[in-house]
Image (cartoon, rainbow, N blue to C red; front, top):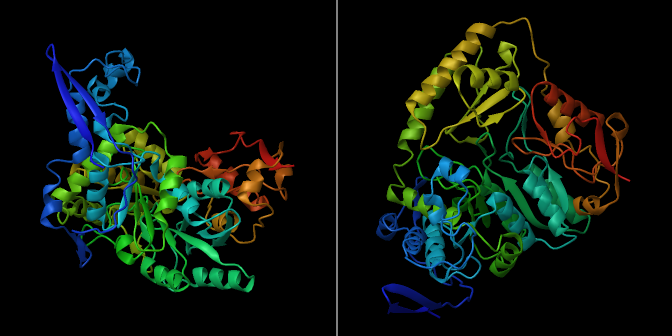
Length: 537
């Protein structure tokens, strides 16, 4: 039902009365999809023009310009009562556009106006059957995807090095994990992707079959934080041959498929659900993401219900509009917009590879996002944490991810050559001051594999059972052999090391201590000093 509006003029004031249907929309027929040729998204003329008038951005702009007497939330009243300390920081303009779900701005959970239009245009650009905007980040999208495909007691095939959102999803949904292992690079202390043979996925499916069980879904992270991409097409074919839906945590891959030198996107490889952090490499505001659906396996009503359960009923229109704007920005020049950042990234790698004692990560087994540059510093006798601290303190270089033996830098649309020159200068300084040093930081590789993603760690309780179990604190040393009651992980990348319900191993504790001693940050532990650990009693 189309919305009806009536404008009344009285004493020079404009009053708006609106009635808006809240019916949920289903895209039965979806025309004008972009095609992917030679790994480059080719958009039709309609998509190419949509950047000029992003529907949600335009609606928000028009609503903010209305001369109205505001008797609605939020309390800052379109900036009139905004805190001075914050307006000094960001100005009053953001508050003018920080509006609630007014009729002309549509409803996130029952869109039929500008939000619906914006989501449809996003689906066209990214090649999805349907797209949902997320204000709770990719975490919310992963949780919704698992809740939509799995019921309590079902089994989810999931890599042991998945993001923390996968494990919170298990608590919410009550699913039982069936862990698989990614390939592992011991020199770099980096968990990679799933191998092209997909033996781990296939073995997991077969093992479940012999036990009389079947996986309700498979979750794969691709690309990883380091930009490592798995062979999703092969995994998808395997999953679909068993009628199992595949979910991809594509948080770091919203840009994939938009350039011939970028790896293929998850959707172009046939996956059923892809969740992207639009704010990571594209240009929406932090915390804004998109959930894309493709194929016919997924029940879209379960997706809608899950999102209604998980997302805020007071979504930020600044976040939503930023998703629309980011989509429009890409639509303007989808085939060429990443030319400059890819060129800069390639130049940076060539310069860094020439620096003595500095290594640049490459992979012959997996696809690799050229916009992620991971450098190894162990030949300099430095941990990644120590090297990162020097780069920040001495050169003002801020990295994206720090590892035990490496640092990862993210190149994006806003990266300039001057930024790269500063990075290269800083790395040269590290090389000159630490090369061939006799002082070697403690080598940490291999420990991560055994303690964090090794299958020897036994699961005694499901994540949900452990979450609700009675708990107590014990000393760090006494926790070995007990059932973990809290989720502890070095962050970033937010890959859990201790998971509720699993037996705590001495190797896991040893790794935590070494990461902390080398300058890493440990999140999730009730006792940040690691003097004690929460266990299930």
